[in-house]
Length: 74
Image (cartoon, rainbow, N blue to C red; front, side, top):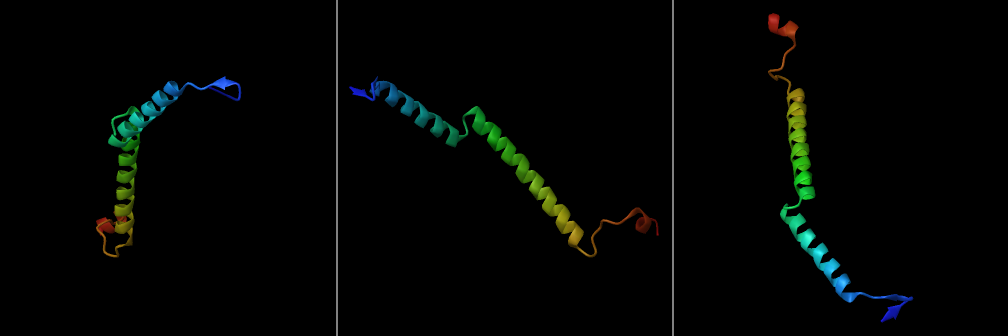
């Protein structure tokens, strides 16, 4: 069959589609290299946000344990 002067390779198209679907399933399961990198990056971001939230909370508390060196000497 010809469409726009090019023969269609249905088997090749199906194989490509199956390969893409397989890759996406593996990606969702975290089994591809890209998925591992993404999960590692996400974990790092979550840790940074947790630390930032703790620091922000510590700064907001009026009687926090964090004192300056001058106050600690008195």
